[in-house]
Image 1 (cartoon, rainbow, N blue to C red):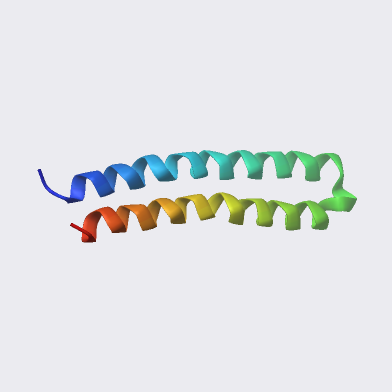
Image 2 (cartoon, rainbow, N blue to C red):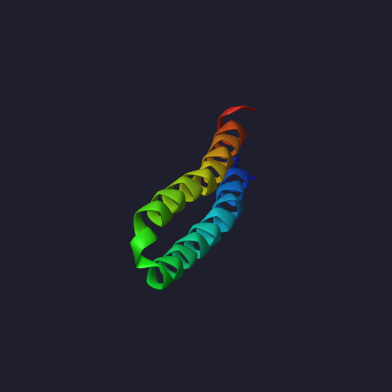
Length: 72
């Protein structure tokens, strides 16, 4: 078995959750901005921070995948 398969599996599964989370964060922020346009700047800042935290999980998956690939 090639050493690439476990790392590809980790990246595939590890990015699925953050991708869905970022989509849900964006949808919720757009709904909040539509309901309350005067607070759209504050909502956008909170959305960007939440997306950064969700994206950090995908970066952790990348680190694990690289460790699986390059460390025997």
